[in-house]
Image (tube, protein in one colour):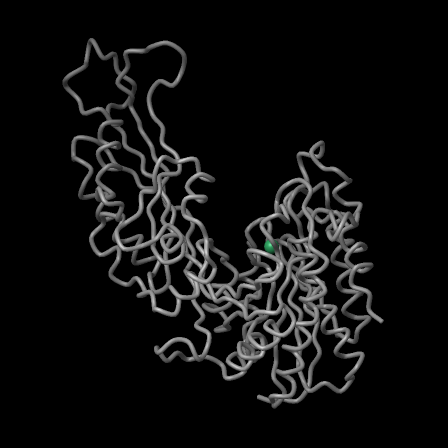
Length: 459
Ligand SMILES: [Zn+2]
């Protein structure tokens, strides 16, 4: 019998920090471990080389009429620092109470093990299970998955024959309430640099003859929102997907105490556009934020200088149907129009990512082109979660961005079923990361039911 907790302990012992080259051995160890584990339960394993950390691709094939699910996970973890804040060694897993502690326990080794265990148990009972399964396990998620788009492009033809991607790398609010993430925000980032005179100027000798670049930048930044909190860039909201009533209902079921949220943030009041609760804003609306601003003298005391340069780092979170390239175009046009011609403007491109949405069947009135197997998977997940966790899952869009999910859709055409499993108190990316063993066991049972239902449903 497959023992997921023992296997998870073994997995955590490999310190697979992708961002730090000193952990090369840990990366190799974790990769060999997961490759060996999948091979031991009957999968044909291929280790795909990438410029940095290889991807493990493990297949269980079968005839074309069998449904085909790709299970995604990542074997890399965040650095464990600061080490002195850990109660037990980050790469020496320890069970305390109902949790297993260790770096990667929740992100993503534990949730990934949930699906490996579900598959192992299912195949133990039904060796002839009519289901094609491909595990796609990457090693660069915690460093932004730089090799992932290239890999997808190269394996596009084989991957696109699958029906959908099943994964658990998102969160839930408590051990009894599973959330299916059905939307993610996209991103557009850029820097603005404004230059006045070719060097810093004495404000006594030259003050009054040039426009101060900090003033120009501040006026530009101030112009990018309206007083009620909306982004003031013509066309910015044109393509924003409308929020459907079922989405608001699902979010309302999640509850959430706005006053407690306000106190948690430590602000005197929210600053939200009209018509949206704070919880809705995070999920349904695009934003424009200033992530950094600089220019002029920042040291102690005073300096009567007119600085030569001022800069700001700006990012937008995008929502479904907004196209990052189109938004970039609108932003740049607006910025160029609003910066006066007596200073020099430079815009520096940074990266971007598409938003993502998948609409569970039976909910939206908007018909969408989705795999029938995915529709079955949603229904099966609904039933399995309700049975195992005692209540049906909630379907929610999230405010964050998971680039690989959008890339799977853009490059390969695959939708994702994101069954959340980690809790707020699991401390992802922080000291004392842990995974709830009760959630783990229930996750395994739910995943097993979903996969069994898919196999029995045919294609
Ligand atoms: Zn993760």
